[in-house]
Length: 178
Image 1 (cartoon, rainbow, N blue to C red):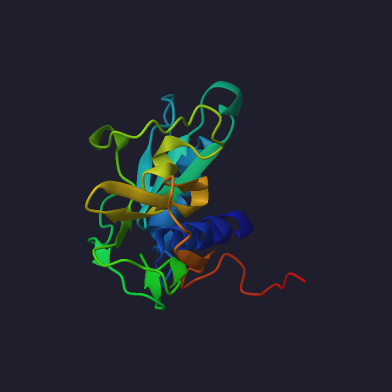
Image 2 (image 1 turned 60 degrees about the vertical axis):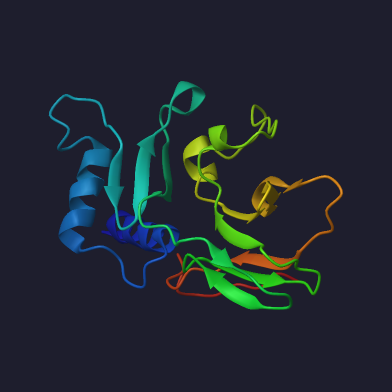
């Protein structure tokens, strides 16, 4: 039961939900992950609570990845200088005073729409998780992808602070860094 509840809490935190998915749905996924209900077939990608649950491959074939699914992401939101907002119910973002007009925050999405040479070969964040990361755009394209350390050349940092801050944390007990 501990593993079942842990799975529900992880899904609700990553999916940005206030409540965990129903116990019935969580238990079904949990059993599939354990191979109980797979009926001899390999585990394939599943969705639950706004998350994609993906089987690892290569050196990570014994692992699973739980990431936010791209469906249901918020629409692009224009931002103003010196504001603080919650994006996608998961990220608390504080902007500096140097925000230019026309700047918006949205999910990164698929990069074939952009002319940037962003090399992710050495990136530890899998593509399924990257495409849903908060990204700043202007009329010419990507300005900043904070979690990937990308800032367009000649740009001044715009984000003062960004934190993963879901409505339902994985642990009910808080923790502090000193």
